[in-house]
Length: 296
Length: 162
Image 1: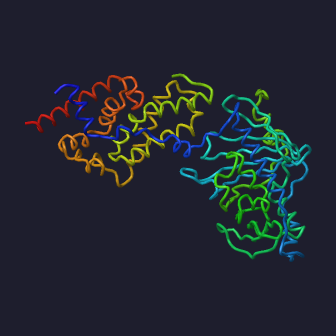
Image 2: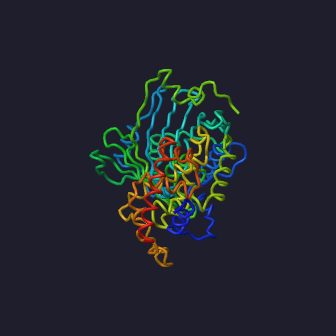
């Protein structure tokens, strides 16, 4: 038996249809390749995320509850706020029915926000549905940010359609404001991972119709956020109850199933304020984090 | 193939898919013993390539990286408890599964590395250097492994024909 005979045997052992050519679209569906111009991934991503922010801010919020009970008054007063010189650091694990797909189980998000003018922030996102990580930085209220492109090692200017507000980066600030404005209502207490928590609900409404609800679990003693569950009754309807949810779209550009209601679960592994050292301030500065990297 | 810009890399991956789909599928089916699981492994391999293409910038050979990924995907899939070799329902249905049961059983009984080398040589048409790169062994080991596998197939075929 010669080499050709072995080939014949092996060919007969494993037969596949001769005319099968594969389905490239299925490959793309499993690992979306964004349509891009020049290094468009980060740019398109942030633009689309800004679109979601715009859509969110176009909604109006109403609440079925006003005149907060004591528990909310205490919460509003106690929810941690940074001193002017501190740096807020958040380490969050996000699970969502909106972007979970094969092999995508969680998104890891880190946020740094300085308390001093010009209130620099930096958001770092790692997710399975996109190669690499997204590293975006700017200042509160700015309409332009910088996104680090690790392929070309440059910082890409990225426009925000609307300024990123503090509420998108600091859920404590948002829930404090929601309580003070009467847009939140208490929902009892419970235990989460052995930690006593207070539940607070914010309902988002559009023209009188509930479009989503957000359930905040805050520590019963420190009032720091522990978990936030966002439930959208309509597509893109819920982030108004939790503006930070709009940041989730950063690595994806848009929710893959925008026509379906979805749920986002934010688990705060860390939420604390860092000492105002130069090193810690640098964590919120994308240019400091990528020294020598030019702006494209 | 040396690549650098991202768009070129995506194009290179797509070209490898369209040009080599049958070979990738054949190796995957060879390792997994099931046509559907083989198809899924090929799709997952290229999806993984797209998702991780940033890593490819440091790799000279897209082809070698794809083959190595395919092997890894298949071996991971093989850990599934339903794993079996060479008795796909389609093969059984068209009569080929039982054509050379002794040879099939012998190939199935080959040590995993021998089977990988055999499939990569015959189904993927890779040369010894490429196989060595994919499997992670020396080139000389590929030659020796392939020689041993061929010898076993010849012996099995001799018994069948006797």
